[in-house]
Image (tube, rainbow, N blue to C red; front, top):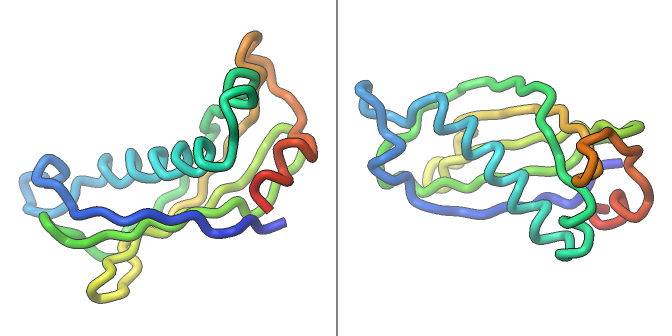
Amino acid sequence: MKSEIFEYSFLVPKSAIDAMNHVNNVVYLQWVQNVAEKHWITNTNEQIRNKYVWVALNHYIEYHHPAIENDEIRIETWIEDYKGAKSERHTKIINTTTQKVLVSAKTSWCLLFKETLRPVRITSEISTLFS
C-alpha cells in the first residue's frame, strides 16, 4: 500500500544554516519529522488525533546535495507500507529550482494509543485516510 504523496514548500531560513554555510543535517531530520506531522494533521480529525499518536522507531537518511539559505525546498512524503502497529514512511527533500533530490529518508513509525502509549494495530480506520 503506497499512500498519496503529501508535499509542501518553503524557503530555507537563515536559522537552518550551519558553520559550513549549508543546511545542518539535524535540520533535515527535523524537516522529515515536521512533514510527517503535517501529513498526519492534514488527513485526520481532532477525534483521531486525540485517540492516537505516532512515535519514530528509526530514521535512515541519505544526504545527496546541500541546500543553502533562501533555496526553495519541496518536501514530499508518503507511506510505503504498514504491518501491525508499524508503518514505513518515505520522504524526499528537493530543491525546486534544480529539481535535485537533496535528502531521501525512510522512517519506521509505531502507532500508539494516546492515553496508554501502548502500540495499536493500524486499522482500516487509519490506513484508508492515507490511500
